[in-house]
Length: 76
Image (spheres, rainbow, N blue to C red):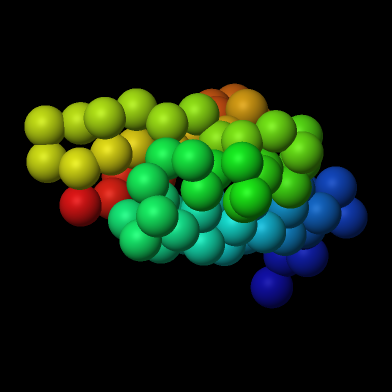
């Protein structure tokens, strides 16, 4: 097995942390509306995730870059 360099592991761990925080923020938005984003910030910036309404729900985005893309998740 190939062992990833430490910075790749740190990056993957950080991405997982951001995704978990994003999921918690999404649940709070579903329950309490977009004001809840203030209470569930992006762990990498301390700022709220970017919220975008979509035709069937919404999307949250972090400025954290993973594999040269910002992390986004869609929720319905």
